[in-house]
Amino acid sequence: MRDLSVIIPARNEEFLQNTIDDILKNIRIDTEIIVILDGYWPTKGIPTNSRVNVIHHSESIGQRAATNEGARLSDAKFIMKCDAHCAFDEGFDEKLATDCEYDWTVTPTMYNLHVFDWKCLSCDKRSYQGPKPKSCQCGGTEFERVMVWKPKMNPKSEYYYFDKDLRFQYWREYKKRPEAIGDIVPVMGSLGACMFMHRKRFFDLGGMDEDHGSWGQFGTEISCKAWLSGGKQMTNKKTWFSHMFRTQSGFGFPYKISGKQVSGARKRSKDLWLGGKWSLAKHDIQWLIDKFSPVPTWDAVPEVGKEVKLDKKLTKGLLYYTDNRCEERILQAARNQILRSCNGHKIVSVSQYPIDFGENYVLAIERSALSMFRQILKGLSEIDTDIVFFVEHDVIYHPSHFDFTPERDDTFYYNDNIWTMDASDGKALHYKEMKQVSGLVAHRSLLLDHYKLRVDVVERDGFTRKMGYEPGKPIRHGGLDDYGYAYYTSEHPNVDIKHGNNITRGRFKLEEYKCREKIKDSWILSNEIPYWGITGGRVDDFLRSVIGGTIDQAENISS
Image 1 (spheres, one colour):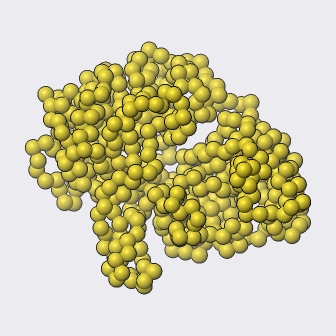
Image 2 (cartoon, rainbow, N blue to C red; image 1 turned 180 degrees about the vertical axis):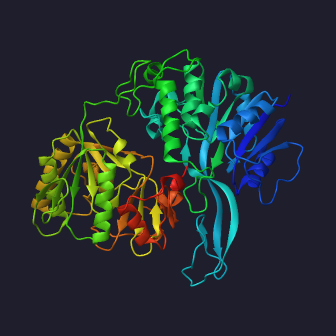
Image 3 (cartoon, rainbow, N blue to C red; image 1 turned 120 degrees about the horizontal axis):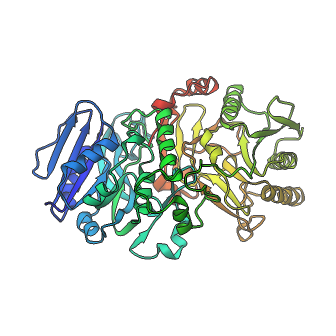
């Protein structure tokens, strides 16, 4: 019996051999690797090694089935499933095995993996992994890829939950709680990219449920089985792994997953955990929520066996404000997408001249920061919903943006899953915690109080950059009130189009940002936006596809 089998389901994985080499370099106990080549064969092949076992399927069986097969082939005490684009801490296997009780499912601390840079052959300047650049600032057009393969030590991820729609979420605020203190701590949710447990325990829990389909709800399944069986889901901070996220062109998800398949996985997940249909459960979902309460979004939990019903007490509405100064192709794309995405929520619009969009009000005033604030205040005075989403005329909103419900009535919430796109060339930018008014949602009462104060102050004293456009800045830093703000992350991103006539100009160079030290580690500049596909050099095609509602969801979904 070996100590550990590392199971790697792999399909069309460019960095599989790098992952294997990294594991072999860092193992310290009797560890083997079981690779399931799921419907493909690597271009370079896999070098022979006594610790590496390779299983090949000419046709794909799916990620869950491949994980189960790897566990069946193992005779080790422990198993660890990981993705095929990961790096690991020295001695990670020994550290995890030393601190893993029988009924635990464990994940190490996670960092982002810096896989490679592009080096300009003319000046040797390097740029972060992504699409191959077309040109360098020096004028050079020839580049070579230089492998880096190192973890980025910021951000660090250790705490997770799943929301009331059973979607995986990062839980930044959990670190402030007493339960999060220590080297090995309980967490509500789990990662799909890496998990460690006793092999026999894996089969005690029924393995991975293949009725979910190949992919989707992986982390939610792992953590629900851990907790509801009477065991625990834990984070081991004594060791780490580093994971390459598929947010760049060329890193597309290897499995073709349709929207129907993703919905099917979530329906199966709800049936098992919310519907109380998992036969091995010793606890119900209410027990788990109570254990970690308060949990974001979980303000009400259905009884076991009852159909899941989301909270219907709070109504949602959209406030659309515009100065009407935007290209028609962008206006049309944004409005069409809002109508498709809003899930029937009420729309109130405020504009410089009449438009046929929602319940329209006109404020014909000169374009300025104050006029924008007055438009917002007018809209807030007219809309009668409990929750208000701000929507702007040059942002393409994904439906998942409107799934969120603010858990507190004294906090401004910002969706940080935003990409800005240059309307001239389609270049797209993303970094974490991109705080924008176009991604703001909060309780109407809070927004109304804030914008009444904002309009009064700006009318009296004028607008200053120190005050800023975004609610949530404390008074001591130049803000207007001391209400806080928080971030949430929609399943798929919104696209903020920079077209030269925005109130805030588009900035696509890191050196243009005062906060560059804070955002540099999450900075991504790309020709492709997750879910939406390739935008570089095809802005008109992108806008036409949005206007016509022909974005191919099956092909563009990224992990």
